[in-house]
Length: 358
View 1 (tube, rainbow, N blue to C red):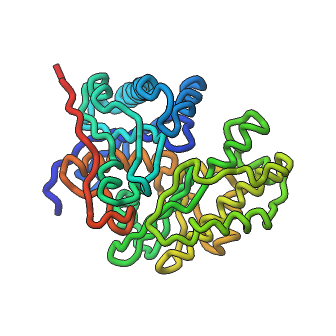
View 2 (spheres, one colour):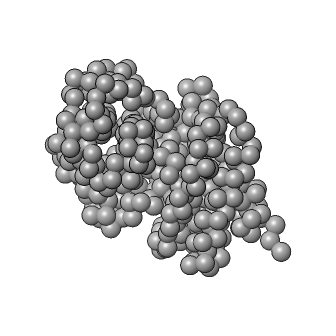
View 3 (cartoon, helix red, strand yellow):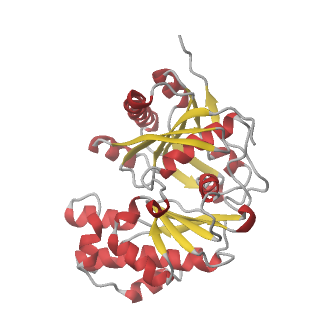
C-alpha cells in the first residue's frame, strides 16, 4: 500500500482542437486515485481562438496571447473551485503552438507563475519540454493515467484511443506493459473542412459525413505517407497533415472522406501494436461522431466502445491526466517512458510555480 499523501488536484487541458479549456478535479497520491471530482469545459471566445491561431508556429504576439490564454485558464479554475473548494495543486498543460520533437522543440504557451498568482495555488506546467530535451517525442503523456485506470478493468490487452485534433493510442498488455503513440489526424482536418464549408465548428454527430460518400482512392494515397510506416513511439503536430487532398470534393463527400481517413489512420496504427486489443476504448471529442465510430469498427474489425462503457469520463480524461501528472511531479514520479514517448528512461516532467499565498 502506498504511503504517499493524497492531494486534491485540478487538471487543465486545451488540446489541438482549440475549442476551449477542460478542467477536472482528481484526488490522488500520484499512484492510486481516490476520487474523480467535478469537471467543466469553458469554450474559448472566438476572438481568442483566432488570436491563438495567429501565433501557431511561434510567430506573432506570442507573449500577449500567452497572457490571455493564462487568464482564460484562471477563470476556468475559479469556476471549478466554486464547486470543489480549495485544491493543493493545478496541472496546467497550456496551449500547444508548436510541436517539432525531431528538431528538439515543443512549445505550450501558458504562464505558470501568473496562473499561480491568480489562483493562489501552486501550478505544475511545461510538462513536455523535459521529455523532448532528453530525446523523447514529448507526447503522448496521458498513457500514465490510462495505465492506472486500466488496472481496475481485468482485461488485457486493451487500447485506449484518444480522438482530439490529433489521435493517439495507448496499448496496455499483461504486467502493465505499455506502448503509446500518435495515430495521425483525428478531428483536426474535418473540423477545418466543416468550418470552411459550413461555418460550424465541427460536424455534429457526423451528420454531414453520413450524407457523403468516402473516396477510398484518396485515402489510400494519403496512407502512402512514410509517417505511417515509421515505428512508434512517434508524435504529430496538428498541422502535420493537410486536408487539401479533398479540395475537389463536395462538402458531404469531403467530410466523409476526411472522417474515414482518421479511422484509416487508426487502423494503420493498429499494425504497430504487439497484440490485437480485446477492446478499444475511445475518449476525446471524436467519440461523439457516429460516422467516425462506425468507420473505426469497420476498419479495425474489433470491439470499439466509448470509454463511458467502463465508466471513464471521456470528455475530461486528458484534463484528469494533467491533474494526475501534477501530483506525480510533486512526488518525483515519472510521467513519460520509453514505450510512450521514446525517451531513453522513465522521466518526470513539468516545472513548479509556487503561489504566494497570503
